[in-house]
Length: 379
Image (cartoon, rainbow, N blue to C red; front, top):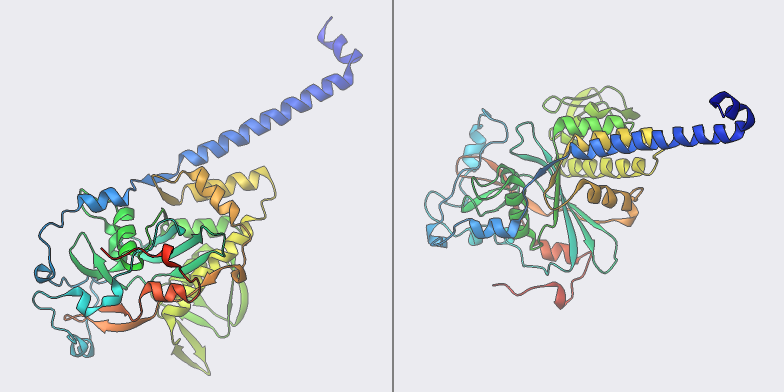
């Protein structure tokens, strides 16, 4: 029987066969695109325990520790005279006891079984300093997730440098023994007492790309708002749909100013406001992640994320997407949050750092009480 004759005698069979072929073909095409997107994900070696063991600290005691001036976040920044005058509440010109300087920078160990922990990091343009550091905790008992922003200028123990440094410097890694993700995770654990299970980090361009693909985010201000350093420039009050570039400037802004009664006024508590903005944008992106409308949009979103994020080697992109899917559409009210209590401090050369004024464990227990099984004895 010829093809033409078969078509004439069995038209519906032919239609069904062709339709099935088209569907299977499109499915295979989309599957290929998704697989290709997964293959673009960069990963970084991640074994904090092994990295910790590899960093040689033999012979390091409190009497051997010498203060190292933190590197400035922006190179070439000149120190004002009043900064130099404030430097030196503690004499760090020789050896010193870091615990005596800032005891709350050292955390009480918390059992690894209490939480699954995720460290979300936004890297600066250099890729060696963390501009955004958010710790997300999922209690194993099924309680609400916990989210806390860790200030990048937090003065904590740096095992690689064998001294106190800003937390964000951990992303530079420890040459030959620890990747950036590993050293930052070690520093976060030494401060919080909680081992870090997974790390995901994104750079500036990647963040903007993800926001654009997800359709932008909503930003609301009471007055025209600007920040010359971050590039933020919102010319009118109210709410607007912001693209990735504006959203990036918004979450990075540390010197926010608003036009109030004809004068540009610095916004008080900019660091706290900055952390709130960062978390708010994450919640908006989580809400958008619940609205996949078609295989095409899904593929585009996966591809955007895949090309913009760097994951630790123990966390495949598939598992990361599964985690994101689990929390899609999550609301602020269903997440327990708190802020790190800090005080400003000037180092001997005038660098601005933040000393924690309460232990991380004490602050955590205000929203999630730990029983005795949740705390490990100090060694």
